[in-house]
Image (cartoon, rainbow, N blue to C red; front, side, top):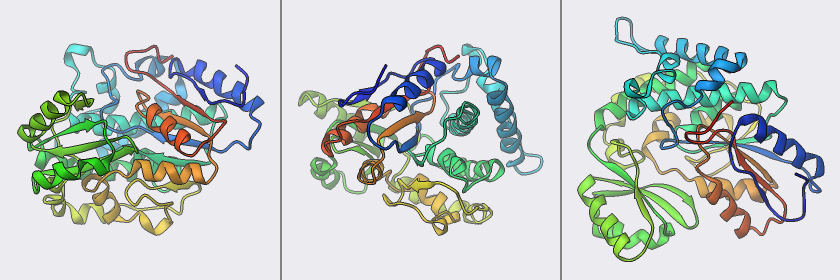
Length: 344
């Protein structure tokens, strides 16, 4: 497939096909290529993700082994542990991937392994951005966190997550965040904006009863809305109320200088090295994900190739909406894996 003067969006499929499509586009791209790795967040996980890459890609397997070891080392001595690599290879009936506390470290490990696999094929980004938990893997890719410290961040985050499990859920609503102000006022103290994915959609967190009321209201008004399969109200006032549980733990995370541009979805700005202290990784799970704002900045800075790193490409529509808004004539959007697909 050669590059043209119109947008190019490739579906995520087998990773070799993705790489072939991307390289072909690169060859014909008329504008300067500026590549972004977009790291997926919760909701993209699925049972069996990465399984065939584990079987067929030594670089991918080796990296997962390092991640599994770092994850186990993050637990206090004597605490029960479980193994990421074994979890990714479990049979469907035995998998715990539906549990947020399991999916969280598995997503980070898989995305870090994809980074190393792509690097081994000669594909590296000019910048990174991450949605929710995807920021941990993005920070690894950009050189700010090594694998042991990435999993320290994951461990302390899951400690807080465990305290709020079952206390709320999350709902995607296909409306601009500005149009949700009436809902936030009506349910003051019970509802939070969890993520602004694009200029046309947002995620809200709250109690299940409140979210079910809003879901019914949206459906009655022919507005698309979908409850996320999660039992934790991420990026909400509920998380903020428990974030002090692990302040000393977050302070133990050691940060490097970094070597790539990092567009933060915590601040909505281009990050600087001082941003990544322990407080950042606490805010990372408790404050809204400013994904649309970060993507706007990336596009304004001339980035035009977006490769979603994760088990399923969830942000293609969000990214293409940003391209339309900024009237970008030539770009590429693709993913690496897709849910239930062949990931060889």
